Length: 373
Image (tube, rainbow, N blue to C red; front, side, top):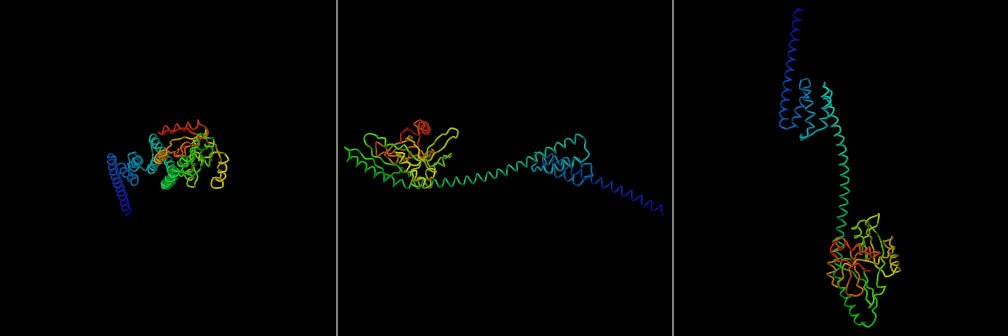
């Protein structure tokens, strides 16, 4: 009886060993099948699919002789540059698994090098994500600024349309004024002509000027060297917009460029032109009471004359050409010929400053001339 039990036990052990051996052979066969399929995919440059196939062996057949190579190939193919779905995190995971295996010094060195490289790549990706977030914030700010510019441009066009609408009325007023001046000059040809002051405007500028009748010889009071500075800006377009807003309020606003050593280009916004300091100071006090608390009187006796004509259409075209080039012109009646209007740009302390600016206008195709205001 004991002998029979012993025989049964021996047979069971033999059967178990055979079964275990059979199972091991089966696993090896299955693992080899996946490895061959993965190798074929890799040869066809289908690196993502090949990495998935190698991963099956690494996950399901750790007891087979293919495990070590499957782990290594899974890591490499997941970070292959031609892999359509590179996954550095998965590659890093399998490399660390690989480092836990029994490796030769060369194999361990290669794996450690790849791990260091991937960790550096992950750090760079984190920095990149931070830069992308910062870029998105800057993009939001830029879009808002673009929206503000669009709004400002729309308002500018509205103002130009309003100014154009006033053009016809101003043209009629000027024609009436010219006829009145001619009639007065003829009736008083043997007498000294009196100095007249009357509001006028030029085309699209809605600018207050003063019309003068002219005696035979120029007198010092015929000049208008004083003006009032209400503001100054670094931005040219913003300066022009502020000057145009002042015209909407009934003031004769205009812009003049100035280069300040150490500070660069600035654009000053002026209002009006006056014979004496007292006249200008009185007007400045009124401006301070209104919306320009920083208004002050300056002496700017020189300007750039870019045209003179009695024809409204010529002045209109010249003014439009200047506006396209970024210059905001203003007008005064000519001292010698009351039926002609001078189109001026800027205001300057010295003739030299005006001459420098005139060179820029000449380069733009205009015919500038330095004159006293």
